[in-house]
Length: 157
Length: 108
Image 1 (spheres, rainbow over the protein chains, first blue to last red):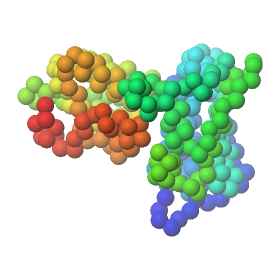
Image 2: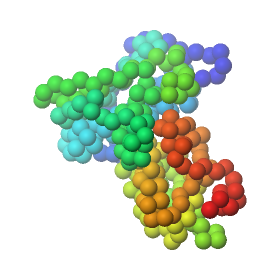
Image 3: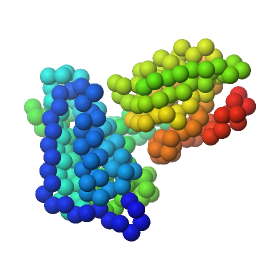
Image 4: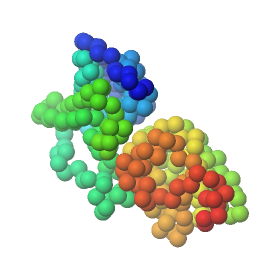
């Protein structure tokens, strides 16, 4: 964000997209996130990192949630109220225990080839929360106050 | 993802362009590095436009594979966002990173 400028407040912006579980569809959802953030006045870097969090969330939903079953869908909903962005990513999977996901910064995990997706989301967003309901898949809600700047730039990481 | 390899004094300089993301380059990166004709590998990442956690995972996996074979894998010309990601994930402490090709070549 240029010095002195602030994201615009936009009320009632809501965008929803449903994709089949193909990796090539991830970018569709990522681009929506980035454009929504840029339209709200977020700078390119900030929009990029939020887009990256969305990319990781959708990739997890396709790979771990829907197990690459193209018949299963991933739904993404973006809601912007004022400076508050809420992104919900839902899949048709059976869920998992987020507490059991290992910390990629732990020295014994540093050289692992996987397990950084949720860490990215936590780094780039203000808050992430998973919910599971039997028979209705997994929902991930990620929130970000666009006026706070990006996770990396604000020193959160 | 596109990769081009050239040999300089027995060191394979692999220039990677495009995306290293899940389903679009992550596996390719691993294959290109595994098929390099040298155990001294300098990965020029200046042309990388996007890298996600899968891409980072492949970088880490490739580093481990090369190192376990007694080789060396070093990084050249990190794009700013990739540099930030390596700092955030603390992997910057693992990789040797260079901004100057001659300096990188001289380090092997």
